[in-house]
Amino acid sequence: MADYDVIIVGAGFAGLYALYKLRKEGYSALLYEAGSGVGGVWYWNRYPGARVDVENLEYSYTFSKELEQDWQWSEQYSSQPELEAYANHVADRFDLKRDIRFGTRVTAMRFDEETDRWSVVTNQGDHVTGQYCVMATGCLSVPKEIDLPGIDNFKGKIYRTSLWPKGGVDFTGKRVGEIGTGSSGIQSIPVIAEQAAHLTVFQRTAAFSMPSQNGPTDPAKVKAWFDNRDKYHQQQRQSAFGLVMSDIAPRSAHDVSDEERRRLYEERWERGGLGIIGTFYDLLTDQKANDTAAEFVREKIRGLIEKPELAKKLLPYGHPIFTKRPCVDSGYFGTFNRDNVTLVDLREEPLETVTETGIRAGGTDYDFDILVLAIGFDAMTGALCNIDIRGRSGVSLKERWSDGPGTYLGLAVAGFPNMFLITGPGSPSVLGNMMAAIEENADWIADCIRYMDERQLTAIDATCEAQYAWVAEVNRAAAATLYPLAKSWYMGDNVAGKKRAFMPYIGGWKKYLDRCDEVAANGYEGFALAPGRATPEMAGQTCSKSTVA
Ligand code: FAD
Ligand code: NAP
Image (cartoon, rainbow, N blue to C red; front, side, top):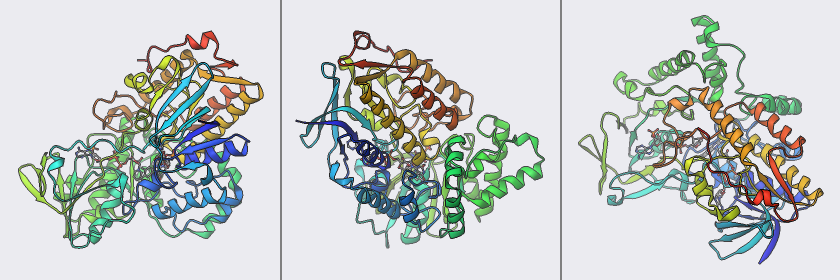
């Protein structure tokens, strides 16, 4: 059995950076990755049209100035192949692959209270130990279970956007059905429609989507970005979502005239992307303010669809804008003006069953050769609960989280010492720029390990008290917003049986980072630190629940 300082799980952007950072700090680290390559999300989601919806100037690593200057994105919002190439470039440039075991899934982890080490088992028969485990398993890395009646009847091919085959799929001359109109559906539908003989889109909830206004990278913009790089990085830290370009303006939607409000929305719509969310500070908290943005986007959708009857079906109602993850598209709505595209609104024609040849909805049979599923993920907790993780006294993480994912700062879970999460539930993570979130979390973790090492401490465990207080803060922040009004994956609504709770932290990026800094500066306040073996106080520590009502 091999022993390491740190075992890292996942070779997406989080795991790659954690490996780089911890190795640079002089620790021995081994990384396990289920896929056969690096990139995580950008390795698995190779569906046509997959690309970022945060501009690459902000969705890039910042830890190496040389890397930043050497790598040039070809578009403002780059596509999956370029993101995967970037991940490989980083892994090769910093010689990371030698410490990665590809095609190897971590299946079980157990904390040994005698040695303060994790014992880690994989599906390839590996058995290793690590003083620490860094879980870089991803917020959106586990496709949710297929919940379509009769799915096994279908005789054609089924593809999931989140597990797209490496060789691609040829849709030429094919009749295609696609279920799902979240970000993955909205990105893939226009591209598939261009190739397929016919595309039938099954929509359960119409989505709010903003145009990316994507185009080739503008060298002047890049130069301006790098000329002010340090200032922008500082601004990211001070911002609401870790994003300079989508930051929130300090004005209320109620404080301006109708014309001025419209002009401001128009300006952000023209700029493209998710920036519209920051037009006013009260769009996420005040229903009436939110209505103004929702109506602006609906008006835009009406203008993009030729047939008013069709436009009606594509108009999102029933949830405040932005409370389901907003989408960014390249020609999504215009796709429905094509002769070879049919929209089936499942609100009017409920899905009855998948048949041998297609889907029966509202009494009508829709036939096709290929079915594409863009139906989403078991977000934020899925990957961690898939591993049989056992903390103190053999307590299972999956069971501990059955009433909601309790964490301390999204970085640690009480009762699971020496295990760190990157962008875990209870951190801002998916609400903003994930690259920035990843670097912040991984740096914090590396600093913490260094702190432990310098003091010859061997176990660090969040206290129940600190975790309860943090969960209460996560819940308080969510309750102050409109987010709980939507049925969304943020709330766990998309996975049957999952406890309803707003999983990320919406209290503000700056507030979150300041709190993490403060905790570290105060000698890891809210954590119990043990020299040598776990102290009796730590061993006796059992939190009765994850969440606080
Ligand atoms: P991932 O990239 O998900 O990597 C996790 C890795 O862990 C995976 O490779 C997985 O195979 C591996 N893994 C999981 N469990 C195990 C196990 N038990 N054993 C071994 N390996 C395991 N965020 C943005 O900020 N902007 C965007 O534009 C954006 N676009 C996105 C587009 C798509 C299609 C998706 C799905 C997500 C997008 N996101 C975006 C969010 C995305 O999750 C992050 O940007 C980021 O890529 C996450 O990186 P990660 O390393 O944390 O996780
Ligand atoms: P998603 O947002 O969860 O969307 C899933 C879609 O499938 C929804 O329209 C959902 O309808 C529908 N659906 C699910 N189950 C269904 C069923 N049984 N019958 C009918 N319809 C069903 O998943 P996603 O599109 O893969 O995106 C997930 C997240 O990944 C995004 O929110 C985003 O954070 C990230 N992402 C980002 C990008 C990007 O632009 N860079 C691209 C892809 C993904 P309901 O809404 O009614 O549930």
